[in-house]
Amino acid sequence: MTDKARPDRQPTFSKADRANLRWLWRDYLKARAPWLGLVLLMILVQGLVYQQFLSMTESGLRVIFESGSLRDLAVVCAGVFFLFAVRGLMSYLVPLVTVRLSNEAIFEIRRDLIGHMMSLDLAYFERTKSGEIIHKLVAQTQQLGVFFGLATAGAVRDAVTVVIVSGYLIWKNPVLFTAAVVVLPFIIWVMNYVSDRVKLAQGQAEQALGDYMNGIEETVNGMRTVKIASQEQVEAGRLMKGTGAIRDLMNRVQTTQALVMPSIDLSSAFVYVLVIGGGGYMVLSPDFDVDGAGIITFLLGMVMVFDPARLLAQYFGALQSNLVLLDRVRGLYDQTPTIRDAPDAVVEFDIAGDIVLDDVTFAYSPDHPLFDRLDMTFRGGQVSAIVGATGSGKTTILSLLSRLYDVQGGRITIGGQPIDKLKVARLRGAFSVVAQDIVIFNNSIWENIRYVNPEASDEEVWRAAENAEIADLVRSRGDAPVGPKGAQLSGGQKQRIAIARAFLRDAPILLLDEATSALDQATEERIKSALDRLTQGKTTIVVAHRLSSVTHADRIFVLEAGQLVEQGRHGDLLAGGGLYAQLYQAQKKGYDGR
Ligand SMILES: Nc1ncnc2c1ncn2[C@@H]1O[C@H](COP(=O)(O)OP(=O)(O)OP(=O)(O)O)[C@@H](O)[C@H]1O
Ligand SMILES: [Mg+2]
Image (cartoon, rainbow, N blue to C red; front, side):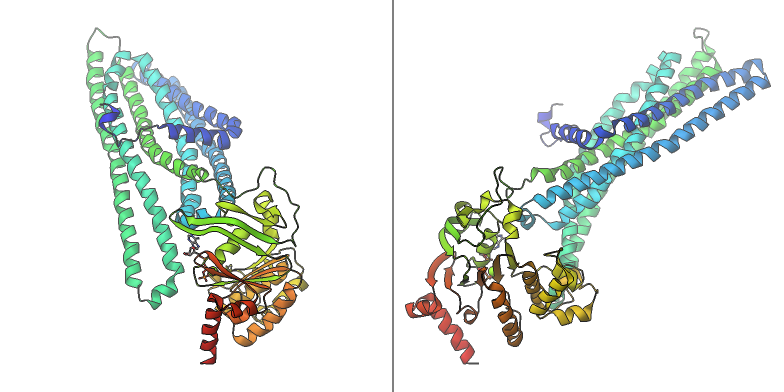
């Protein structure tokens, strides 16, 4: 049969698999070669013990059948006991060393995966399900470690046993051994069949598991929305669908794997019958120089070979699944960050200079262009405002400034320095941001504020908290964590934590994206005056829907669907009678009419 006849067949050891194994060896195992060598040595000793056992058994049986000397028998018994004591010691030492080696390797694989993950662009996390990443870092890596550690050491021991014991049997009785291995092609065929199927199903199962974890995470996180919309049944149904899919896939993987054992059992029955029948004939016939002790020992040897051979076959079945896992884990490295330090990146730039968007083109996806040759200048040390309808691109502009995404055309400069020529950490360090979607960690409020500036002194944190009008809450809640994603806080409380972070960070460029939208008017007024002090001498860009809150800005930019349609001071824009004037009048009417 050619591969062409089965286009969907996954080659048992594809080129990718070989490359992945080389990677595993080179990066995580090679450095441990001396220890691995020691393990191998101990395994060899285990194999030799079996061979010695066979040869002693044969002598022991002859003693019984022929000489009848009790003393000789006692010597043989003592020898056998000693041999198994040695094997027992090795059976203790091999796993002991192996688990240490493999756990250390898992640790390093995870460490590198985490390091690489951290370097990836924000865009990667916006298109990848978090369940997939969790599954990779938790389950897949663990399973790989166990497989390539203990399971592989076991397989090597089995292989060594098979080779040594069969070698001994061939030497003893080549004819009988050849007769016994006629079943080998059949076993190989079964193994091939099984490993192909297992590999295919395992790939699908891993994908399904990642999706499943993601579904659980989404449902759990969105429980508030789920409950308000009374969608518990729908969500449960969705999860149950994944649960069912995993059950079916696991059934497929494991029922296929289950084929291995019975086929080997059947083949061993065939072999035993052959050895007993053929061997018996050899003893009875005067043409062969074989005695009863020889045949009994041979049969014992076959039994000793078959068990490890069976385990070895199982190992190769599992190997296919683990090659798929290995491919998935290493797959993270196919993702490469695009936003990183240029080779000639510098740290020097005029932080107080103008921020200029020059001919900027940007789209989140090719089929939805957002900015086409956009020009904007935010003056250094002044307050600029961006207004415009929802979805017009305001937040995106702020994201582009700190290189959360890279522009696809044109460039952005600060003080004349293109931002992609700056060290990323240096660039981002120049910004204090109050983002529209605030991220709160499950920690105390105090720690949440300190997050943006871990070196800050206690007084500095307190001052930031006072300025953001959240000090009372910090005091009353103390060290209590605020729940996953700050679930135990109100919207306005989260927003004040974000503002406190901006105060604490005190970077030269301040980005405020709807920073006070969730606050009552009195609190907003108090925070505003503190914020005004903060913005003194800093380049500030404010995004706001409530136009009354940006009237004081030195320059206001009006966006409409990614286009800059107007810019100027509040008074000029009003007098111009354009989009800004219309929006302002409409909002004013809304307030007056209340
Ligand atoms: N991470 C993203 N991936 C893909 N598209 C996005 C992403 N973020 C925003 N968009 C799209 O880009 C456009 C501009 O979004 P942006 O968040 O900049 O708008 P905005 O002006 O800040 O709106 P709002 O006033 O509602 O905050 C929208 O059409 C939005 O759907
Ligand atoms: Mg926005």
